[in-house]
Amino acid sequence: MSKLDHYTVFGHPINHSKSPRIHTLFAEQTQQKLSYEAQDVPAESFENAINNFVKNGGKGLNCTVPLKELAWQRADSLSERAKFSKAVNTLIVQKDGSLLGDNTDGLGLVADLTINHQISLLNSRILILGAGGASRGIIGPLMEKSPAKIVIANRTLEKAITLSDEFSELGDILGCSYDDIKEQQFDLILNATSASLTGDLPPLAETLLADNGVCYDLAYGNEPTTFVKWGLSHNAAKSLDGLGMLVEQAAEAFYLWRGVRPETANIIKLLNSER
Ligand code: NDP
Image (cartoon, rainbow, N blue to C red; front, side, top):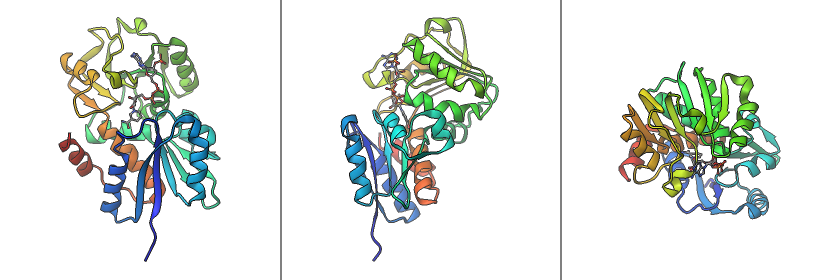
Protein backbone atom coordinates (compact mmCIF):
# COMPACT_ATOMS: atom_id res chain seq x y z
CA MET A 1 0.00 0.00 0.00
CA SER A 2 1.55 3.38 -0.98
CA LYS A 3 1.41 6.21 1.57
CA LEU A 4 -0.09 9.63 0.96
CA ASP A 5 2.10 12.65 0.16
CA HIS A 6 1.14 15.69 2.25
CA TYR A 7 0.56 19.24 0.97
CA THR A 8 -0.91 22.29 2.68
CA VAL A 9 -1.80 25.94 2.30
CA PHE A 10 -0.70 28.39 5.00
CA GLY A 11 -2.42 31.73 5.45
CA HIS A 12 -4.30 33.93 7.89
CA PRO A 13 -7.28 33.95 7.70
CA ILE A 14 -7.58 30.64 5.85
CA ASN A 15 -10.99 29.11 6.58
CA HIS A 16 -12.47 30.54 3.35
CA SER A 17 -9.77 28.89 1.20
CA LYS A 18 -10.90 26.82 -1.77
CA SER A 19 -7.39 25.40 -2.30
CA PRO A 20 -7.97 22.10 -0.40
CA ARG A 21 -11.04 21.41 -2.52
CA ILE A 22 -9.28 22.30 -5.78
CA HIS A 23 -6.21 20.16 -5.07
CA THR A 24 -8.35 17.24 -3.92
CA LEU A 25 -10.26 17.46 -7.22
CA PHE A 26 -6.95 17.61 -9.15
CA ALA A 27 -5.67 14.55 -7.26
CA GLU A 28 -8.84 12.56 -8.03
CA GLN A 29 -8.70 13.58 -11.69
CA THR A 30 -5.04 12.66 -12.14
CA GLN A 31 -5.13 9.68 -9.74
CA GLN A 32 -2.39 11.06 -7.52
CA LYS A 33 -2.21 9.84 -3.93
CA LEU A 34 -2.00 12.96 -1.80
CA SER A 35 -3.66 14.95 0.95
CA TYR A 36 -3.99 18.74 0.97
CA GLU A 37 -5.10 20.68 4.02
CA ALA A 38 -5.44 24.33 5.04
CA GLN A 39 -3.58 25.57 8.09
CA ASP A 40 -4.20 28.90 9.83
CA VAL A 41 -0.71 30.41 10.15
CA PRO A 42 -0.26 34.06 11.17
CA ALA A 43 3.03 35.68 10.16
CA GLU A 44 4.64 35.26 13.57
CA SER A 45 4.11 31.46 13.48
CA PHE A 46 5.31 30.98 9.90
CA GLU A 47 8.87 29.85 10.64
CA ASN A 48 7.78 27.24 13.20
CA ALA A 49 4.92 25.97 11.07
CA ILE A 50 7.09 25.54 8.01
CA ASN A 51 9.87 23.77 9.96
CA ASN A 52 7.32 21.35 11.44
CA PHE A 53 5.75 20.71 8.07
CA VAL A 54 9.10 19.79 6.52
CA LYS A 55 10.17 17.75 9.57
CA ASN A 56 6.96 15.73 9.27
CA GLY A 57 7.70 14.83 5.67
CA GLY A 58 5.45 17.39 3.88
CA LYS A 59 6.13 17.60 0.13
CA GLY A 60 4.99 21.10 -0.76
CA LEU A 61 2.87 24.06 0.27
CA ASN A 62 1.08 27.14 -0.90
CA CYS A 63 1.33 30.44 0.95
CA THR A 64 -1.32 33.11 0.79
CA VAL A 65 -2.05 36.43 2.54
CA PRO A 66 -0.07 37.60 4.54
CA LEU A 67 2.81 35.15 3.99
CA LYS A 68 3.98 35.48 0.37
CA GLU A 69 6.87 37.82 1.11
CA LEU A 70 7.95 35.77 4.13
CA ALA A 71 7.88 32.66 1.96
CA TRP A 72 10.11 34.47 -0.53
CA GLN A 73 12.59 35.26 2.23
CA ARG A 74 12.41 31.72 3.66
CA ALA A 75 12.95 29.83 0.39
CA ASP A 76 16.43 28.31 0.05
CA SER A 77 16.32 28.76 -3.72
CA LEU A 78 13.99 30.59 -6.10
CA SER A 79 12.69 30.18 -9.65
CA GLU A 80 13.54 33.06 -12.00
CA ARG A 81 10.01 34.45 -11.89
CA ALA A 82 9.88 34.25 -8.08
CA LYS A 83 13.22 36.05 -7.80
CA PHE A 84 11.76 38.95 -9.73
CA SER A 85 8.37 39.03 -8.01
CA LYS A 86 9.72 38.98 -4.42
CA ALA A 87 6.63 36.96 -3.50
CA VAL A 88 6.28 33.18 -3.30
CA ASN A 89 2.95 31.32 -3.38
CA THR A 90 4.34 27.80 -3.94
CA LEU A 91 7.12 26.02 -2.07
CA ILE A 92 8.47 22.65 -3.17
CA VAL A 93 10.27 20.53 -0.58
CA GLN A 94 13.39 19.17 -2.26
CA LYS A 95 14.90 15.73 -1.55
CA ASP A 96 17.44 17.27 0.87
CA GLY A 97 14.68 19.10 2.78
CA SER A 98 15.50 22.51 1.30
CA LEU A 99 12.69 24.70 -0.08
CA LEU A 100 12.40 25.86 -3.68
CA GLY A 101 10.13 28.92 -4.01
CA ASP A 102 8.04 29.75 -7.06
CA ASN A 103 5.19 32.09 -7.93
CA THR A 104 2.36 30.72 -10.06
CA ASP A 105 -0.10 33.63 -9.62
CA GLY A 106 0.89 35.42 -12.82
CA LEU A 107 0.76 32.28 -14.95
CA GLY A 108 -2.65 31.53 -13.46
CA LEU A 109 -3.99 34.98 -14.33
CA VAL A 110 -2.58 34.94 -17.87
CA ALA A 111 -3.97 31.43 -18.50
CA ASP A 112 -7.42 32.48 -17.29
CA LEU A 113 -7.43 35.66 -19.39
CA THR A 114 -5.94 34.31 -22.60
CA ILE A 115 -7.04 30.65 -22.68
CA ASN A 116 -10.28 30.48 -20.70
CA HIS A 117 -11.61 33.90 -21.78
CA GLN A 118 -9.83 34.36 -25.12
CA ILE A 119 -8.64 37.88 -24.23
CA SER A 120 -5.61 38.99 -26.24
CA LEU A 121 -3.06 41.07 -24.31
CA LEU A 122 -0.99 41.96 -27.37
CA ASN A 123 -0.70 45.78 -27.66
CA SER A 124 -3.33 46.30 -24.98
CA ARG A 125 -3.21 49.13 -22.47
CA ILE A 126 -3.30 47.45 -19.06
CA LEU A 127 -4.07 49.17 -15.76
CA ILE A 128 -3.26 47.35 -12.52
CA LEU A 129 -4.98 48.71 -9.42
CA GLY A 130 -2.86 48.04 -6.32
CA ALA A 131 0.84 47.49 -5.70
CA GLY A 132 0.91 44.64 -3.19
CA GLY A 133 2.05 41.02 -3.39
CA ALA A 134 -0.44 40.01 -6.08
CA SER A 135 0.65 42.87 -8.37
CA ARG A 136 4.28 41.79 -7.97
CA GLY A 137 3.41 38.28 -9.09
CA ILE A 138 1.47 39.22 -12.22
CA ILE A 139 3.57 41.94 -13.89
CA GLY A 140 6.25 39.62 -15.34
CA PRO A 141 3.88 37.08 -16.94
CA LEU A 142 1.64 39.91 -18.26
CA MET A 143 4.65 41.64 -19.85
CA GLU A 144 5.56 38.38 -21.64
CA LYS A 145 2.34 38.81 -23.65
CA SER A 146 3.62 42.11 -25.13
CA PRO A 147 1.01 44.63 -24.03
CA ALA A 148 1.43 48.25 -25.21
CA LYS A 149 1.98 49.35 -21.61
CA ILE A 150 1.23 48.59 -17.97
CA VAL A 151 0.23 51.36 -15.58
CA ILE A 152 0.16 50.59 -11.85
CA ALA A 153 -2.05 52.88 -9.77
CA ASN A 154 -1.92 52.67 -6.00
CA ARG A 155 -3.30 54.49 -2.96
CA THR A 156 0.24 54.70 -1.58
CA LEU A 157 2.06 56.27 -4.51
CA GLU A 158 5.59 55.27 -3.42
CA LYS A 159 4.72 51.59 -3.62
CA ALA A 160 3.50 51.93 -7.20
CA ILE A 161 6.67 53.77 -8.18
CA THR A 162 8.93 51.23 -6.46
CA LEU A 163 7.18 48.46 -8.32
CA SER A 164 7.37 50.14 -11.71
CA ASP A 165 11.08 50.89 -11.14
CA GLU A 166 11.80 47.25 -10.26
CA PHE A 167 10.09 45.94 -13.38
CA SER A 168 10.99 48.76 -15.78
CA GLU A 169 13.50 46.69 -17.75
CA LEU A 170 10.62 44.46 -18.94
CA GLY A 171 8.94 47.22 -20.94
CA ASP A 172 6.72 50.30 -20.66
CA ILE A 173 5.65 50.29 -17.00
CA LEU A 174 4.60 53.36 -15.02
CA GLY A 175 3.62 53.74 -11.38
CA CYS A 176 1.19 56.51 -10.42
CA SER A 177 -1.67 57.68 -8.21
CA TYR A 178 -5.39 57.33 -8.99
CA ASP A 179 -5.49 61.04 -9.67
CA ASP A 180 -2.84 60.71 -12.41
CA ILE A 181 -4.98 58.35 -14.53
CA LYS A 182 -8.24 60.33 -14.46
CA GLU A 183 -7.93 61.31 -18.13
CA GLN A 184 -6.61 57.98 -19.44
CA GLN A 185 -8.28 54.90 -20.91
CA PHE A 186 -7.38 51.23 -20.65
CA ASP A 187 -8.34 48.06 -22.52
CA LEU A 188 -7.90 45.86 -19.46
CA ILE A 189 -8.28 46.92 -15.84
CA LEU A 190 -7.07 44.41 -13.26
CA ASN A 191 -8.12 44.96 -9.68
CA ALA A 192 -5.22 43.67 -7.56
CA THR A 193 -6.21 45.67 -4.48
CA SER A 194 -7.72 43.93 -1.49
CA ALA A 195 -10.49 46.58 -1.48
CA SER A 196 -13.10 44.10 -2.77
CA LEU A 197 -12.67 42.01 0.36
CA THR A 198 -14.31 44.82 2.33
CA GLY A 199 -16.73 45.86 -0.42
CA ASP A 200 -14.65 48.98 -1.20
CA LEU A 201 -13.47 50.33 -4.52
CA PRO A 202 -10.49 52.55 -5.39
CA PRO A 203 -11.51 55.97 -6.81
CA LEU A 204 -11.99 55.23 -10.52
CA ALA A 205 -12.88 57.83 -13.17
CA GLU A 206 -16.10 57.12 -15.10
CA THR A 207 -14.23 57.14 -18.44
CA LEU A 208 -11.34 54.87 -17.41
CA LEU A 209 -12.43 51.78 -19.37
CA ALA A 210 -11.98 51.94 -23.16
CA ASP A 211 -14.75 50.78 -25.53
CA ASN A 212 -14.83 47.00 -25.53
CA GLY A 213 -12.55 46.99 -22.47
CA VAL A 214 -12.38 44.18 -19.94
CA CYS A 215 -12.44 44.32 -16.12
CA TYR A 216 -10.92 41.55 -14.01
CA ASP A 217 -10.96 41.38 -10.22
CA LEU A 218 -8.30 39.08 -8.77
CA ALA A 219 -10.58 38.68 -5.75
CA TYR A 220 -13.61 36.40 -5.99
CA GLY A 221 -16.66 35.52 -3.97
CA ASN A 222 -20.05 33.85 -4.17
CA GLU A 223 -21.55 37.17 -5.26
CA PRO A 224 -20.08 39.54 -7.90
CA THR A 225 -17.43 41.74 -6.25
CA THR A 226 -17.76 45.52 -6.05
CA PHE A 227 -15.24 45.87 -8.89
CA VAL A 228 -16.99 43.28 -11.09
CA LYS A 229 -20.19 45.29 -10.58
CA TRP A 230 -18.31 48.49 -11.48
CA GLY A 231 -17.18 46.86 -14.73
CA LEU A 232 -20.71 45.71 -15.57
CA SER A 233 -22.10 49.19 -14.95
CA HIS A 234 -19.39 50.73 -17.17
CA ASN A 235 -20.19 48.60 -20.22
CA ALA A 236 -17.24 46.24 -19.93
CA ALA A 237 -17.16 43.65 -22.71
CA LYS A 238 -16.40 41.20 -19.88
CA SER A 239 -16.26 41.76 -16.14
CA LEU A 240 -14.70 38.75 -14.45
CA ASP A 241 -13.53 37.70 -11.03
CA GLY A 242 -10.46 35.70 -9.96
CA LEU A 243 -11.94 32.21 -9.52
CA GLY A 244 -10.43 31.03 -12.82
CA MET A 245 -7.05 32.49 -11.83
CA LEU A 246 -7.25 30.66 -8.51
CA VAL A 247 -7.80 27.32 -10.24
CA GLU A 248 -5.11 28.00 -12.86
CA GLN A 249 -2.44 29.05 -10.33
CA ALA A 250 -3.28 25.91 -8.36
CA ALA A 251 -2.90 23.76 -11.49
CA GLU A 252 0.54 25.25 -12.07
CA ALA A 253 1.54 24.50 -8.44
CA PHE A 254 0.18 20.96 -8.76
CA TYR A 255 2.29 20.50 -11.89
CA LEU A 256 5.43 21.72 -10.07
CA TRP A 257 4.82 19.23 -7.25
CA ARG A 258 3.58 16.21 -9.15
CA GLY A 259 4.83 16.62 -12.73
CA VAL A 260 1.24 16.10 -13.97
CA ARG A 261 -0.89 18.93 -15.32
CA PRO A 262 -4.55 18.72 -14.29
CA GLU A 263 -7.32 19.73 -16.67
CA THR A 264 -8.93 22.91 -15.31
CA ALA A 265 -12.04 23.71 -17.38
CA ASN A 266 -14.36 21.23 -15.69
CA ILE A 267 -13.15 22.22 -12.24
CA ILE A 268 -13.77 25.92 -12.90
CA LYS A 269 -17.22 24.97 -14.20
CA LEU A 270 -17.94 22.92 -11.08
CA LEU A 271 -16.81 25.67 -8.68
CA ASN A 272 -18.82 28.25 -10.63
CA SER A 273 -21.92 26.08 -10.36
CA GLU A 274 -21.51 25.95 -6.58
CA ARG A 275 -21.64 29.73 -6.08
P1 NDP B 1 -1.68 43.09 -0.40
O1 NDP B 1 -2.17 43.26 1.00
O2 NDP B 1 -0.26 42.73 -0.63
O3 NDP B 1 -1.94 44.45 -1.23
C1 NDP B 1 -3.16 45.09 -1.13
C2 NDP B 1 -3.23 46.26 -2.11
O4 NDP B 1 -4.57 46.77 -2.07
C3 NDP B 1 -2.30 47.43 -1.75
O5 NDP B 1 -1.81 47.98 -2.95
C4 NDP B 1 -3.25 48.41 -1.04
O6 NDP B 1 -2.88 49.76 -1.19
C5 NDP B 1 -4.53 48.18 -1.82
N1 NDP B 1 -5.77 48.52 -1.08
C6 NDP B 1 -6.28 47.90 -0.01
N2 NDP B 1 -7.45 48.46 0.35
C7 NDP B 1 -7.68 49.47 -0.53
C8 NDP B 1 -8.72 50.44 -0.68
N3 NDP B 1 -9.77 50.45 0.15
N4 NDP B 1 -8.63 51.32 -1.69
C9 NDP B 1 -7.57 51.29 -2.54
N5 NDP B 1 -6.55 50.41 -2.44
C10 NDP B 1 -6.60 49.51 -1.45
O7 NDP B 1 -2.68 42.01 -1.04
P2 NDP B 1 -2.36 41.02 -2.26
O8 NDP B 1 -1.65 41.79 -3.29
O9 NDP B 1 -1.73 39.78 -1.76
O10 NDP B 1 -3.83 40.62 -2.75
C11 NDP B 1 -4.64 41.55 -3.47
C12 NDP B 1 -5.92 40.86 -3.91
O11 NDP B 1 -5.65 39.86 -4.89
C13 NDP B 1 -6.69 40.15 -2.80
O12 NDP B 1 -8.06 40.43 -2.98
C14 NDP B 1 -6.41 38.70 -3.02
O13 NDP B 1 -7.46 37.87 -2.56
C15 NDP B 1 -6.33 38.66 -4.55
N6 NDP B 1 -5.56 37.51 -5.07
C16 NDP B 1 -6.21 36.56 -5.84
C17 NDP B 1 -5.53 35.50 -6.35
C18 NDP B 1 -6.27 34.49 -7.18
O14 NDP B 1 -5.72 33.41 -7.44
N7 NDP B 1 -7.46 34.79 -7.66
C19 NDP B 1 -4.10 35.30 -6.12
C20 NDP B 1 -3.49 36.36 -5.35
C21 NDP B 1 -4.22 37.41 -4.83
P3 NDP B 1 -1.77 50.45 -0.22
O15 NDP B 1 -0.45 50.03 -0.74
O16 NDP B 1 -2.03 51.89 -0.36
O17 NDP B 1 -2.05 49.92 1.17
